[in-house]
Length: 214
Image (cartoon, rainbow, N blue to C red):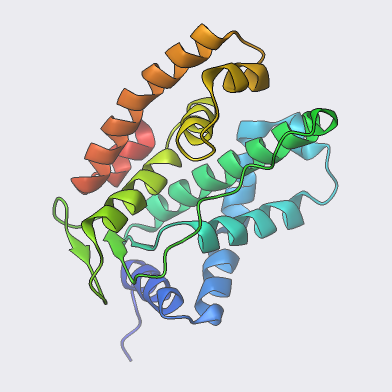
């Protein structure tokens, strides 16, 4: 009997999930939740370990980022794990920031809603290759790449770009959230944009491993 390899199994689960199979989504979480939890523990340290329900927090956050992220296919399970761990880490940073700023009534930073146009980004394909189960506008494709590229930025860079481009905050408002002045907030935004552009270039060229490392 032919058994699927880890590569084909990873792709099959992602494909089934994109086609609406919730069992495939549950299996993706089951396979990698423990590894991602360990990774996040090492990265976030005591801040996360102080919470008794850490396992549930990580698993629930993993489900949230999977559902909100652009649809993608990747064959390398290690790359998938690293990508999902980065997404979870960013989401937990957002949660922690809101908890700290609750008394200031800061608006909740929401993930950009996942599209329903059937667009699937191939992260380990030839440069720029994309499958479209239904025709998708070029603008929608670009938005999907940008949303995924944002998840590969460091949390602070991601937040600055997110607040400016999606929440449409002024640099003064961004500075207030970060405890810095307006000009410094503008400089951080301007420094983050080339980093995002580099991530996008690497993703479009099928270099997910490099995008995760840099």
